[in-house]
Image (tube, rainbow, N blue to C red; front, side):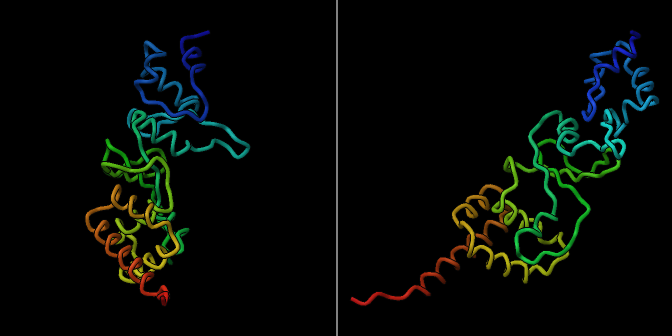
Amino acid sequence: MTKFEQFKAKLTPGQTYRRADLAQWSTAVDRHLKEAVQAGVLAKLSGGLYYAPKLTAFGAAPPEDAILVSTFLKGAPFLLASPNAYNALGVGTTQLHNMTVVYNHKRHGTFALGSRSYEFRMKPAFPKTLSLEFLLVDLVNNLDQLGEDAEDMLKRVKARLAATDRARVKKASQSYGSERTKRFFNRTLAEIDLERQDSEPTTRT
């Protein structure tokens, strides 16, 4: 078995690699990378980032977002999100966005990885997974970027809060909201509680 064949045997279809990861399997990594790309067993995604294509009945599948981003960030924590997820909240968002947002602690900016672009945003805190409460907070955080009527959207968010676990929403807003977002949720949740108290029938004694 040649050195290149030994190198190729280490590759796992569907996995992404940094050049530094691949260098451990070769004493001539740049030559082997060039040969691997020419042979189609690796595809170059960006500077120093490669993908071992996974073949399906429809051809080579693209790398999974989570695997690709994890390799790019060297395993650092991150959360994948998209403004399209707001459409499932029932607050009337209608815009479709061809954008994947990556909340993380290390990188900021838009990066082209393979055929896709990702918008990396550094945040001090974010949850491990998307939740309804986080998406409501995230929507208000990003309201000025969505192409929606802001005043109307905030009214719809308030209506949605009336049927939501408000304690969890408040906790999410304190953990992940901007100062403006925190003020909105504090004020709106207080208004909802007051409206509920006013609507409750008084008990005669």
